[in-house]
Length: 419
Image (cartoon, rainbow, N blue to C red; front, side):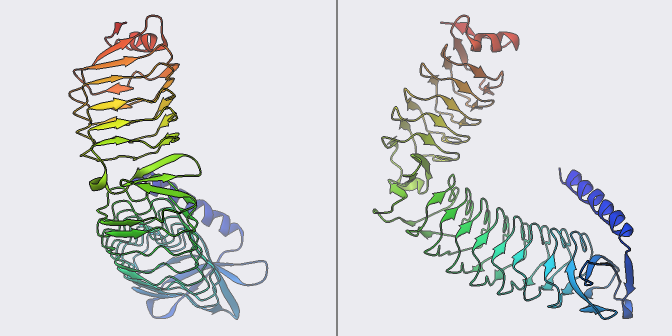
């Protein structure tokens, strides 16, 4: 997959350079072995750097070339290069996406004042990056901007920052010193996934949106308090953490927290179990809940039984994955669909009897449950896959004669019996 991505980006870069050649590409040789800048003139007479080539460890982008100001750096301009330091003057106000992507020797970079956003994937895969400034003018950090910057340990975010994009700091495993500014309104999905060196985080009052998996696998964080302003929360932003304290006001307008489980009042959704140590072994989902979200009870190993109210209509992917003590399920009469890997490696389950009225069974919904002996699929099922029940060697599949389930299993030569 990575090779495919690199090939795609390389071809795109070559296409970009070919286009730029048509737009009268010029070049400038820097003194003292500072490499070569390829650039073009823009409509307003200013210059845009298209590419840098060279072997210098330290690169300084010129402020002017021939009395013409340098105001922009194109996408991919430094991608894959081996320099260690880069200085960008304040004349530059625009930097393209992935301009420094996969510069795995880059250690330090100075960004110009006046930038308003950090573009998508700007420093993706810069595994040696140690120091970078975020100018005070920046209001948004783009998707995957710093993802995989595995040596970046501290970063000062500007007070005017309002949004951090999806996976912006994904797997920044050394990041330990970070303060979220007071004006922040949005944190994207998987934003700080696996930032395992973070030991504390204060979510500011004024935060409105928290994306799914935002702090998942941040094993060093032990306390979280949700602000009253928070309205939208994606599926389990705090999965695979070790939270000792989780604070949500009982009067919160949008969220409800009880027995270690977080709910969204607005869309009647079970967001996820935040503190598995507080989860009762025999848990009853709250009345009125309509959706059990992805990763809802992921790896809740003390869960032995689950009771769903009849309002639950959908269970999303991986909801009970790894619940290896779960042995009893009281189904919702209104359940219509389940996504993939809902019951994966639930080794205490011996029987699953889906309720009459159930309709959609995704591929790999029931997966690798080694002690599962019987699965009953009702005639109401209108869609299922030949691998909906997969890797359950003991499971006997029971279907209604003439049903969709019977046709799917028969066509796939999978053994079954009819009820």
